[in-house]
Every structure is written in structure tokens, then in C-alpha cells.
Length: 61
Image 1 (cartoon, rainbow, N blue to C red):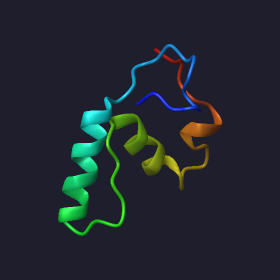
Image 2: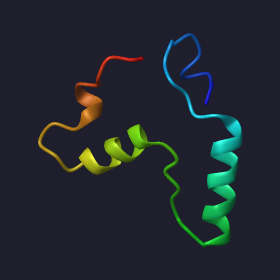
Image 3: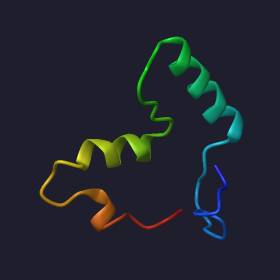
Image 4: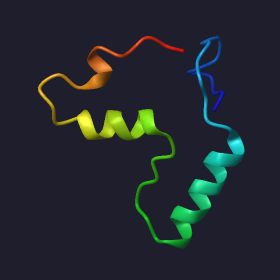
């Protein structure tokens, strides 16, 4: 999704509709956290790794 943080980056972004749908589904399911796209899920999964993805992110695109 285009935000202030991602403005100007030429990369695949989640659509606002997909983010909103996932958020509503998460709320209805009483989820504490909703991860919408695969990259976000990969980052979350890597947080306890020796070298998390965010320290050496893949090329944007």
C-alpha cells in the first residue's frame, strides 16, 4: 500500500482494498495481529533469525 514510508519506491505494494479486507477479517476473528502480504509474513518469521530480513532486504521490485 502506498504510504509516506513507501512513497517513491518502485515496488509491488498491497492494494488498500486487500489491506482493509484483511483487517476486517482479522477484527471479526478477534486477531491481535494481521499480516497481509507474503513479504511482511517473511519479515515477521525472520525476526528471531540470526540475520533477520530487514537487516539485508531483498532488492525492491
